[in-house]
Every structure is written in C-alpha cells, then in structure tokens.
Amino acid sequence: MELKPGMSAFVTGGASGIGKALSLALAQRGLFVTIVDFSEERGKEAASLVEKENTKFYSSLTVPSALFVKCDVTIPSDVAGAFEKHMETYGGLDVCINCAGIGTKKLFYEDTTDGTETWRRTVNVNLLALMDCTRIAVQIMRSKKKPGVIVNMGSAAGLYPMYADPVYSGTKGGVVMFTRALSFLKRFGIRVNVLSPEFVQTDIGLQANPKVVKSTGGFLAMDDVVKGMFELIKDDTRAGACLWVTKRRGLEYWPTPEEEKKYLIRRSKRNFTSPNFSSITIPQSFEKIVVHTLSHNFRSATKVIRTPLRLPIDPNFALVKILYAGVNASDVNFSSGRYFGGKGNEAGARLPFDAGFENFIPSWLLICPLHFLLITHTSVVSELSGFVP
Ligand SMILES: NC(=O)c1ccc[n+]([C@@H]2O[C@H](COP(=O)([O-])OP(=O)(O)OC[C@H]3O[C@@H](n4cnc5c(N)ncnc54)[C@H](O)[C@@H]3O)[C@@H](O)[C@H]2O)c1
Image (cartoon, rainbow, N blue to C red; front, side):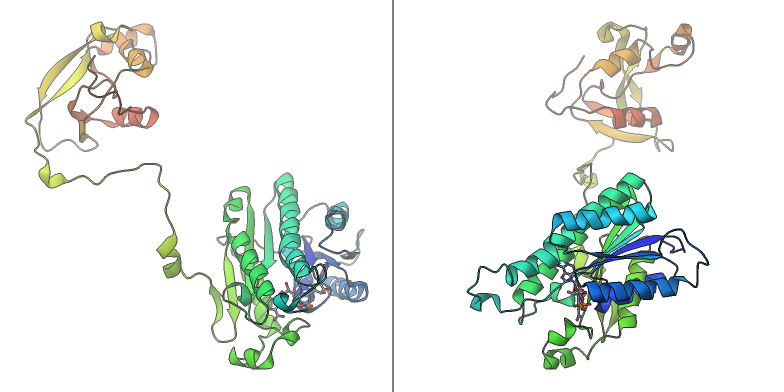
C-alpha cells in the first residue's frame, strides 16, 4: 500500500516506545494518527508530536491530525469507543497497528495470586486485546470496501522460547500464529502481518537480562523496527507474513520458504492418481457414441460406432480410457440438440454428431475441447460402474 497524506492510522500502545516511534513515522508521511493507550500523559504528548509532524503537510485542517484516546485495550467497550472516535473523525481506516503490550510482572509458576494483575493480564493485553482490535479493524475495513493493512506486534520471543517470561513468549507465539492464519483476508483487500523484533531499548526491552540482550548483538535501532513496519505495509504481496528483525541478520521473513515447504500442503481440487503409461497399449480403433437423430430418448437417439484411431492424434485432442460412465440430464439435453444455439433446425443440420462425455461406454475415447468443456461441468460417478445405455 502506498502511504499518502490524508490516510489514517490507529495505533494501540502509541504513547511510548515502539508504538510512539511508529506513530511518528506514519505522521512523517502525512498520515492522521489515533493514539490509543492507557497512559494519558505520554499519550497526549505523543499525539502533539504527531500533530507537529503533520503541520508539514497541511496548512489548515477541519479535523485534528492526531487524536489521543485513553483506553485500556483489555476492556471491549473502551476499544469499541476508540475505533468509533477514529471513524467519526477520519471516516476511514487505512492502517491499524496493534502494539500495546506488557511483560509479566512475576514468574507465573511462583505466582500465588489468581493472575488477574500478573500473567492473566499479559495474556489479555498481548493476545486477547490484539485479537479484538484486529477483529474490529477487519470489520471496518471490510465495510468500507477499501484496502487496509493491519500490523500486529509480535516478538522474537514468539518465534523461539523466552525462558525468562514463558507467558510473554506464549502470547507472542499466539500473535504470530493468529496473524499468519489471517493471510486469507487478502481476498478482501485486507493484509494482516506481524512484526517480530528482538530487543529494543524501551520500557519493556529494559526489563530483559542485559546478558541475553548482549548475546543477540545488543538492542536493535528503532529505525530498523520502523523499516520493518513500512516493508509490511508497503509490500502488497505480504499477507499473513511474519517479519523477524534482528541485529545479526536484519529483516528476514519467518519461516523461510524452505521451512515452509516442509509442512505446506497445496490443496488441489483434483485428486489425480499418477498413471503408469508404460503399461498402456494404444488401441487401433476406439468406440464412440454418435447422435443420429434428435431425441430426449438417449437410447433411440444414439448408436455406438467403432472408428479407426489415427495416430498421432490431432493437437488439442486427448485420448482417454473411460472406466465408468453414465447418462444424465445434460446428455439427454445434448442428444435432443438443446446445447446448440440458433434456430431449432441448426442442431438437425449437424447430424450425425458425437455425443457428450458422460454417456461413453467403457472404452477408449478421443475427446476434443468440447468434451473437455463437458468434463469440467459434469461429474462421472464412479459407482455407476460400466453402465451402458
Ligand atoms: N522492546 C522490546 O524489546 C520488544 C521486542 C519485541 C516486541 N516488543 C513489543 O512491542 C510492543 C511495544 O512495546 P515497547 O517495547 O514499545 O514497550 P512500551 O512499554 O514502551 O510500550 C507499550 C505501550 O503499551 C501500552 N499499554 C500497555 N498495556 C496497555 C493496555 N492494557 N491498554 C492500552 N495501552 C497499554 C503502554 O502504556 C505503553 O505505552 C509490545 O507489544 C511489546 O511486546 C517489544
């Protein structure tokens, strides 16, 4: 998606850290931004910085170029209200960034509370609220029938284990898989992608063990995270994509195409069994059914004739062996001439003509494009073994 002034973005967790940096980067391209966060002071400050960036693009506006909405993303009515406010102000939604996130205050297996303020909250903020925001953003984008991009904030801790905070790691793994499972929304013009950086120097990043941060090469530059977000927004081919951002390797999609090949099952509507061509003996002649008189009574309209097989067969023809066949309504329509356009006597002028596909007797059959057409529109029922009209 090409970002243009006048488009709008909705950013949760936009009051500080990565969310704030992403909001400002969007404003630097002239986007209106709604910052959604429960930190009021920081949120208002971030919104005023967005407005400042936007003054470069607009001399006068009838709406504020940035909004701050105080919201706890775990409260569904707060979230719905924030989206409503955004839509009332900007009338559309081009980009939604779900960035609000927290770490777990206490190691969960040492936690004797019911978890409401600790590990359950991590799950609620990082995963459930993100799903809720994605749900509403998709509904809005679908209702507007305009392309939209949603970027969910994952983490490298969602790609491999983060032993220091298993609950955080679990939520981020959930964010990654949730997002990847939404690739199909591309058919509605909505692309949902996930950004998974390693450590960034923010309030959350500073909670990590410095030794672990060092082992990854140190904190990532915020610019690299911003670059990753723009790649996911701009590249129209990316849907359900997970972009891993590291100091050591830069931007890299996860899983790699080689890894993906190991488990990806290509769904095919046709289930072909591979033929053993070496065991096939090509016949000298083949049988076909011709319509010699127009009638709905297929038996009296047709007769079986044997015809020499001239090899090589003409281009656009195929030789197939029919094992099972039957007669159905399309065949009797065909034998009565209904499939020929023009006046009623046009079909009569074509007599005798080859009959359709499904009526063929168990035999070899030479089919031309017309019959291919019939194959795609009809089904041969294998249980009708060897039914001969
Ligand atoms: N910093 C890192 O090392 C790192 C690495 C990978 C992923 N992330 C992810 O990036 C995102 C942003 O984190 P950050 O590093 O910028 O930390 P941060 O603490 O600076 O930003 C998180 C923001 O989310 C807001 N927030 C938290 N709970 C909320 C709630 N219930 N409702 C509304 N707002 C809420 C906070 O007020 C804050 O402004 C998070 O999802 C985090 O998991 C961070």
